[in-house]
Length: 327
Image 1 (cartoon, rainbow, N blue to C red):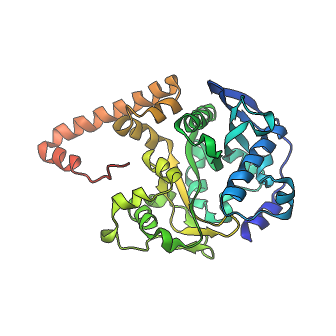
Image 2: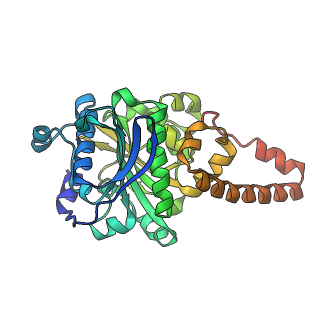
């Protein structure tokens, strides 16, 4: 399996283990960590979600330890949500794995490179700011609610600001290994959210499956969004693009797509679509929120001035630009 062989070639080096609390909400806390005991707790949660609830197939070592792990865990930072009312062994109730470009470059590359050709991102964006790969996201069944998701995103938002992240990316999954079962949603992603050519990551040729399974005119956007996995839908709401082609992951029993989220897209979406959205409001610290809004408001004023110069016809065309109401 290509991903397993890539992991075997990875040679992580020992590095300082960060530990930082970003926020707390009642008994819940969101924490950035690379401490072995915290990572082990995150791996145990991932095992329960991916292998016991879902259709992933563990290796013998994973099954014996009841943990989901690979060599990337040692070089990644981990955002955890903990419930301090639970026993320490089960206190991690949400997790995300984060891998910065400068770290990946020293340790053999990104996790998603086993499925997708990342050269458009690595060649064109690396010098303008930090790239961040996110993955292995999961939340315990009893905590799949707004409060937990808000805390996870609050931790990620702080991390983005801390490291000057300009672009976030990673794999997201549809359940099952038959792309035709998700024809409507995959076709919508391809036709409506395909990344611009300069950042269009593509599935590796020997792994890729087409996403455009239905003609554009035949795709029902509302239905496609209705059946879209929640995580993918959340990224779309923030302005994410998708790469070209899907990849079937036999180990996890999923069909993977590649998500690309430039941070300037988040700022634009926040101002135009999410000004009163409590989920994004909670995710962005007040100082960062003001900074983003300042940039977006200036951009909006420039657009309005240009529109006023061009007259009412241009303004009417701009207002009629189609966009699904769910996004």
